[in-house]
Amino acid sequence: MTTTLEKPAPTPAPAPVRRRRRRVERDGLGLRLYTWLIIAWLMLPIGIMILFGFNDTHSKQNFQWEGFTLRWYRHLFDKGDLTQALWNSLSIALLSTVITTVLGTFVGIALGRFRFRGKGVTNLVLFAAISCPEIVMGASLLSMFVSLDLPRGYWTVLIAHVMFSISFVAVTVRARVVGLDPKVEEAAKDLGAGPVTTFRLVTLPMIMPGVMSGALLAFALSIDDFVITNFTSGSTVTFPLWVYASTRTGTPPQVNVMGTLIFAAGVVLAVISARRGARHT
Amino acid sequence: MARLRGALSPYLMILPGGLWMAVFFVVPLVFMFSVSLMTGNIIDGFKQTWHWQNYTEGFHTYGDKLLRSLWYGLIATVACIVLAYPAAYWIAFKGGRRKSTYLFLLLLPFFVSFVLRTLAWKLVLTDNGPLLGPLRNHGLLPKDFHVLDSGFAVISGLTYNFLPFMVLPIYVALERIDYRIIEASYDLYASRTQAFLRVVLPLSLPGVFAGVIMTFVPVASDYVNSEVLGGPNNVMIGHIIRTEYFDNSSYALASALSFSLMALLLVGIFAYARALGTEDVLEAAGR
Image (tube, rainbow over all chains, first blue to last red; front, side, top):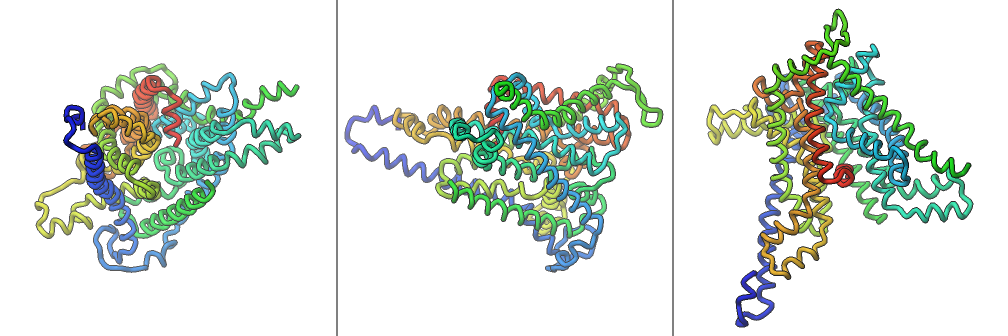
């Protein structure tokens, strides 16, 4: 295309344009194949996980295909400690999401809306918490619990999960708050609304999408966490911890089934919320 | 009075969350630093002796593992960039109306627990597993072909696990680019390579930087992949820290090691963020 300048006139003007467009399309095909290859690669292990939840295996190691069965779906809750671990994971995720969303949202609003002394430090702590290696958070919490002789268990895991999710919620909400027009809140105040009413009826509805995506993120982070939980759990076992421990003796197919169900639930939820979001905007 | 309340309100809003972060994030780090300078053992208890030798001993004994972690982290991060960029590029510019669907497909692994994902990847790499088993039986692979328990297995697992973290910020950065700017570069007689190198790439770099932060730190400090996929010869520093805490109960040495790991990674990250502007990186990381 750089040659266009030197060429005098013989080629008609629109020709280079058409050539350029065709070349773009051809490039697009290669990249399209590439993208689908990446998607296929990412899906391959997930497909295998789902498939081996239907495996009619009779050995402890579940990696040889022995035929199709729904046995593991029927006997999903047969392993008492695995079921307990799953409930622990779900209840910790729910509780920590509620606490984190409330605490993180206020931090996010304060950072997005106000100028105040200590803002820089707060930002710094959030950034440090987001970029801190998980193992360091887990190890430092353990160091503190050990030094203070605090017993580790369900509650220390909950504390840890709230701690590592707050910053993500705060940052998500802050991004939403920064984009808001403060005049709307001023208008509410002019119309006689007190600070609480303004917050409940004006601010909160406007930042709700940010709060919701922060909450979803917090739930996902909590239910998936392995490293920090590993350090703070004592003898309490969550789903990821149980699965990890099972690798030594052989992971039962029920784990694949639970993984499949969590996967399906997550995908369905995400699709529903995306549809909703698309309708609202 | 009203003005006082106005001045107080950001503090009131920060207080609960800030207190939580102070007590359970900042204070534990201080505790860990303090423990890292203690001497003693689990039976007789630990005493603060300002024993800096814990650090030198840690480096002396496990320096190679620390270096290996940084090295594996670097390779996996670069692999993530190389794999993620073209896909993110295609989705952002050629995805059309199905952009979000393609992105969603790339983010699907997020819906499977990290540990399970790693186990599933192990199944893919297992000698007699559902993939390599049949390939070998049909003579498509040599009999002694073996991937598990190698550095390659660990790095591939890390790359697999953290690729979506790289795709997302790069996509966000590319998607924000105004296509008219690229067209303008063509109008100014840029070739496609020139347009990419001098317009698209610089504009997408913040996304790449955010992706590096999202992947390099967790990858370098991970121990799940090296324990599941790496066997005894590819131990990373995370594994050492975990076993020093739980199997050997040498809290002081373990604290010194994790403090060194954090210092190394955070100093790097902060220098990096300072150079690029914290807000930008944070913003991109929060998306």
